[in-house]
Length: 472
Image 1 (tube, helix red, strand yellow):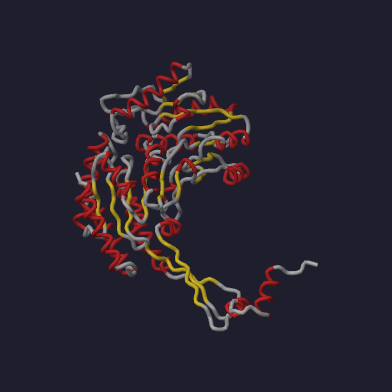
Image 2 (cartoon, rainbow, N blue to C red):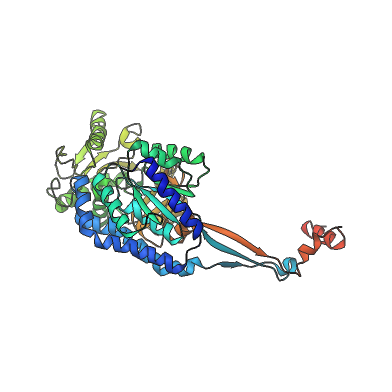
């Protein structure tokens, strides 16, 4: 475990290194991105093993595609686009006012950044936005996730083998260490996790006026249209809902189905899930719940719904397995909004299924809740899709897809309201970790500058009158 003193020493080294090179070249930035890429490539198998150890069960393909692979995809995209994004951007001035004066925006690194990683994506969320930060020319210290000790420990070793700690370092510690981490005078701090801790992080960061990016979650709705209730799309919803055991911030949390198609939707869900996984518990594709506390939390949601009289359906008839910490795909029909399954982010393969009468009432219902990180529409009707895109307030939207709006390197990823602030990924992510500095160079022939020369005379009066033209 890293001590507070050791963290302070690394932070000091990075501050000094940034002061000595506050605008690293394109070549330097590409080198850093390539070294991060090499670290993922070299340790592919090792990361598969540690993440399986932490979760109890975790498919190697999920690790390859969405943990280490997510870091690789982001870095490669940045390597291809970085040269263009680093260029100063000229802004056009009114020559009548400014003469030959010029204006531009320079993309300047901010400095030393902190990144606090969550347990559900202990590799991807530790490093994927580090690509953005390094591309922007910053130095970075990553706080590894506490609930995935094997993976976080390996992450620290791997980064140490590829980087000097004055450029990029991974540190690990308990809850008190995390609290201290958030009080450091970062030039930017990013936290990925839950709303409760995010408030503590933001409060701690405010002491230093540290800008923060918060990547949170929430109850992501999925709205099925009439045409969305079909085999292909119901199946797509199911395998995305159970992906990584439902422990994904962009996972579809609850479904809304046209009331006249509820029975059809439920039957399709039962049939398609049973076809995919007649036996899901113990299957190599199944991901374990991270620990006993979270397994019991989800089970309490299920028990509460049963006690309230809700219809609770295991789609293939299986029961959860406490020893494996695995839960099959379970749906809860029309639970009251007061129940935990509708109040809390489930973070597991349990889905509330609510019915609705018309699209406007469904959109109003979604917008009446705290802002979700993601909102999904499943269907083909173009008018409904457009209505959903324009009127739903959420971090991002997926149409007949789940999560890829947050995984695609060319798109920004971030929440709004309760689901977060700021973003990473895409050009917007690069800008998030960059200071856009204005530069104005005044020409000798600037009429506006001449009007400011005292004592004020006719040219000053002309400019003043031009601001308030005679409308009569």
